[in-house]
Length: 122
Image (tube, rainbow, N blue to C red; front, side, top):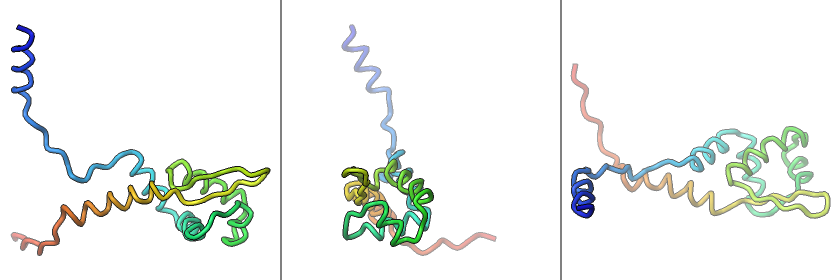
């Protein structure tokens, strides 16, 4: 009796359409973090090497108090990894998160063919 009841429930549920482009909280946090010009400059500075906070401040001509906030946002979004060596913090890109954001955007290209717009009806 239990088996037939479970089968009836599973048959009554219609499959739901899942968008091929599903955003997650991590994806949203990543794009929010990328929305600030200074944070993009930080990523650009870290593109080829790991840097300590003092080097980032010097290269970007930004006070440490201002930079610390932006580093925190980037780190919480998973875009940066940090390690402490003595009293210095070193930052580097977290490539796995950047790859996930790239995958997210590539789904638009894959599932959204560029078609001419339909004419508007007056």
